[in-house]
Length: 378
Image (cartoon, helix red, strand yellow):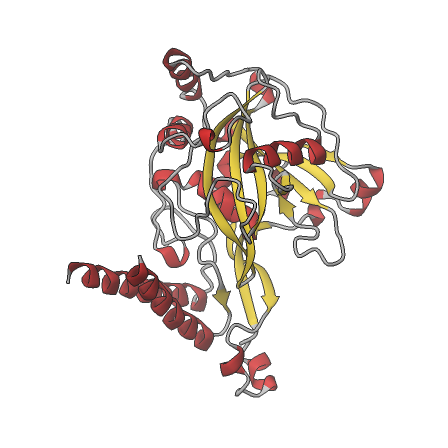
């Protein structure tokens, strides 16, 4: 009875959260703030001070679970950790030639702001790690940068022109970690295998790749690297893959995210429930915006640091003002990092925001049954 009660309670929370979302949408409240709901999850932004959060974030990442580096039989000399227990979206970490899922891996590269002139090194010994955390404790989230790229516009590529993280598809029999290292070097010219320059300090939970509301037959692995160099090496961008690479202060995605997060950051036309919407006249769907859905996004490009363009032609064609916001799969991976141990609220929730109130209610009912069924299976 206890488990059935928890399942019903969880489902009820989903409905309550959607009601709150409907109220926010009706009143055009599109940005999160301190102590307000962050979308459908009902997560509340906490009020811990800015300083000290960097240490808490990295400590949670590094110490949250056991090492999974042994699954790969090599690859990097620093331990690689998962940030939480396996979830429904987590897939096997080991390379399996017979698996049907295609795999992709990315790297989240963190560094200290170059103006501080600090090269903070993390070693394998307990003393070295304590020294690392003591130095990190002096920093605020604005002192730590995260690397992003802008992908080239390519026909047939669902992520054409999007902001992303260095990475790509795994080759045959290649481990996820090796794929992230190789793809990063190929796309931006950063050698993550440089033992005195970079340390892999964590692995986020694997997730199934979603394209809008559709789940693809692909898994996505994300590894977190710490740059131990005082100055970042010169980047060499891959033509045809990357238009630009740039660093963003982490506070844009954590302490100051409320200023840049938008629940309707990206809007697209899409049919969520084909069988139901087929019974509704097209003109009525358009009039009531039943075919419009939005996705949360964060506008980070205007605050980019050290922007590297592929060439002058790209610089002229795609200035920072024309860069898209951060959303979708990359925003989810970034949220996996900043929301460890609920230190900061997720930025990718609600996953989908239908514009029509009718579709929002329909989507809430659908979410309730999916959540309830999932918990019964678990």
